[in-house]
Amino acid sequence: MVIPAFVLASTSPARLRLLESAGIEPIVCRSDFDESQVQLSDPDELVKTLAECKAKAVIEKFSPTPTTGALTEETPKRSPLLILGCDSVLVLDGEIHGKPEDPQEAIARWQKMRGSFGDLYTGHALLDLAQDRAIVRTAITRVYFANIGDRQIEAYVATGEPLRCAGCFAIDGRGGLFVEKLEGCHTNVIGLSLPLLRQAIDDLGYDVTDFWSLPH
Image 1: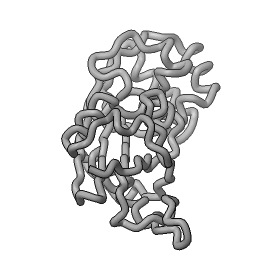
Image 2 (image 1 turned 135 degrees about the horizontal axis):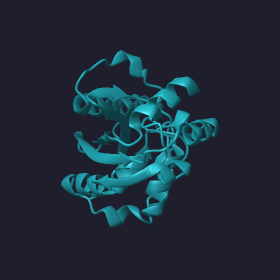
Image 3 (image 1 turned 90 degrees about the vertical axis):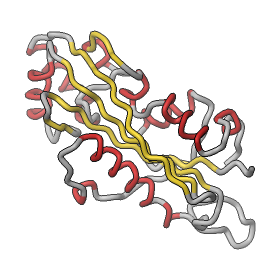
């Protein structure tokens, strides 16, 4: 079986670091999918739909290089590509939250989160263009937040870190200080579940270790 090139349909630094730490060096391709097109009230369906749409949105960016045949952002659909799209939301008391729009929203979110817990949903869509197959799944991690004061909330929001995260915190950054514990996959909270990714790759008939030394 030909091992496809691995494409990350995201410019998220956290997701890229996770893949690189696992030995996978993906081709990074920004997905310009307009998330406002998808309005769903079920968080599981929402993140799966968005992840798949993001992955599909990058397909047209690839086509063959006429002279060398090298893999670039011009490679055709029929080329051996494995494309990963992801999307995350945090659910608090049944309400779905994405990235806060401004510091005021981030402060209000943290005032609701502190001393409580939320469920972090991350949808994963793995598209295998060579086999014309797609695996779309969700990982859910329960996050328990510390009961921090207003001063700490305001100081954290002032760093700008919460504004870049769907959960309004980065557990691999300053936000890790304000998380008491997790129930579920740790890497899922960072951006993607490595165990789920391994299982999806296995289900497509590949071995995840085949991607460790794959040139791109």
